[in-house]
Image 1: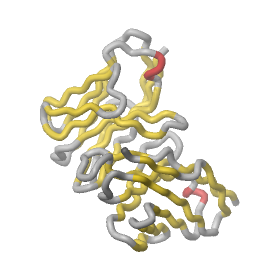
Image 2 (image 1 turned 60 degrees about the vertical axis):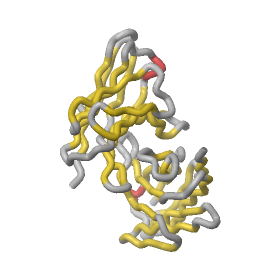
Image 3 (image 1 turned 90 degrees about the vertical axis):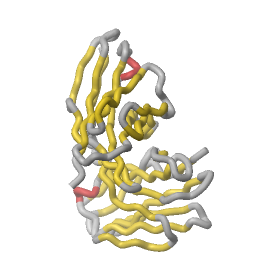
Image 4 (image 1 turned 30 degrees about the vertical axis):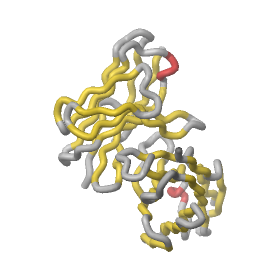
Length: 111
Length: 110
């Protein structure tokens, strides 16, 4: 089966950098997703990593280490609008159509 | 742009009522999903469909059924709503490896 661990809550200051970690156990790896979800809204896709290393997309970057079962989402130059939950997800099984989601990390950005 | 729509943003129903939640995507995607999201539990998969008239149970199918008569539309049915089905319901459609979500329906069962 799948398992995902993320911190429940984090707080960071506007303009700073924050790293949100995700560790996972899967029966066979087939990519890792990050989603952002503002309160009361639907998740929106941020990134998909299938190979090791860092992928940068503007202020957001996502890192993957398959050997360590570890990923992180890096948010730079934090803005108040980045206050949201960040969900880590993996395919439920290799080649599966559906995703298994972690419970998410709620990030609060303070002035 | 990927567009997934859901029939209602907010819904209030009474215990025992039959409830229909509709999801529509206009991108000819084969895979569609229904999740519910509850505080502290994250997103849990109820059902998914990989083609017209094809469906698979997810992790928590009890008390729910689904219908996929046309490719663009995936309906979630609560046969007899109960208070423990009060939740946020999210539909998603998959393109390549990625799932894209509709805006969600917040259902309150009284």
